[in-house]
Image 1 (cartoon, chains in turn brown, red):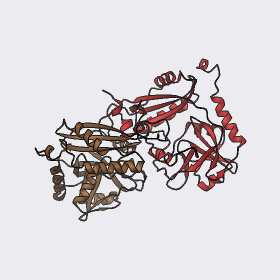
Image 2 (cartoon, chains in turn blue, yellow):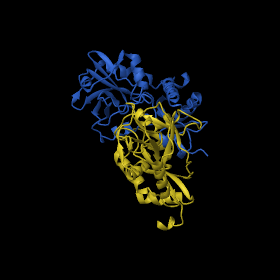
Image 3 (cartoon, helix red, strand yellow):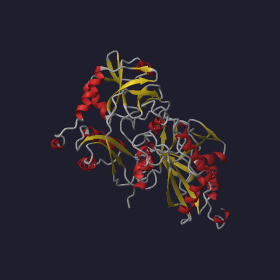
Image 4 (cartoon, helix red, strand yellow):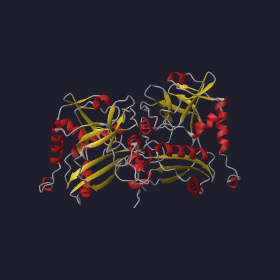
Length: 261
Length: 261
């Protein structure tokens, strides 16, 4: 009998996830989410999920909601006790659909987290289930004074927010930290890098504080402007607003959505 | 409704585990397992489990088996989507009892793993559920040629096997790697350090290969002698055999076990 209580995702975090925004039955970034999921499966040595089955199931989960977020977990499935995976492995897909809540247009208020991100090239970039670093960082504050926290690596370079990638415009050029040693290669990060010229480069806290504009991105909320980082403040920026508008247009609700699928 | 599919252990590895050997209803190292579990709960900011309830439940799970292994998972419980933990958090305990399989007295045959352990002081030492590094290392070999694999940290120092701590006797002195940056502070590691004089010290592969004797420890199998590491071989060592005998005596099945509880 294959039970969730025996799932290797629960026992070891042996799996991946994607959090996908839908408009009706359509997910504009479906292909990119699936590319990352397949890359992650290969990197971890998991079986690849059948993408067409996933699409059918996620659409069914999303269908009752006009705008939704579908979280998809893909694990190594049930296994025996011990780190050795069963042969053959049978992956398990779990789906969670929730209503999409529109994002506030107020800028984000950020803080620094003291929890640092360790370097692990074998796990960096992919969206695996070992997320204690992010959980510990997010647990550093409560209440509504701050929207997100920024995390440094062990060398003191800025990597990302707990649940978003980071972009900063310094001297007119956009920068984002590389995700080769830690951090996640976000879908909205990839989108933003397709919209403007971005250099992947280590970013110090000092450089970030001197930036003309800062943006956080994730696949649920898209690009969001950063209004403050502790006592540093940024005003509304036309280029950032344009990026936000372009992203929003991709998720516009209109009558043609379901017919285009 | 609180469902396992919403558990933060599954979603983020937000939890801990212990693997506890029982003889009948008695677990000789129960207190040490609970001390580590409580320390881990504090370190992760999880609610502390009620130890007396856990003892009652694990004994019930272990009772049908003469000798058993009870795996205990303690998670942050069910939660909403996102890294932020719910307030209040209600921990969840899951128990898995299996029959104890006696350990072979043949020495272990080890290999080197290419997957390295990242440094993360916030998570080192405790037995949390983020175990992808160990899973990836264990996936590096199949078949029965090797029993375990040794893992290095990013600096090339030996830290541990995928599921056991490591001890080496070099020039007559016992050494074991520290577990401040990576690795787990094993219960059997603690026991061995109470039996012989052990220095916690970084261990290079070269030093390990020059050792007079090597031992792996975990709470299920106790101390086990290492017979080989790739082409390096070690013969039976009287001091190691004495440690193995001392451990085994703690788990001897006798009629008094249940009456001593």
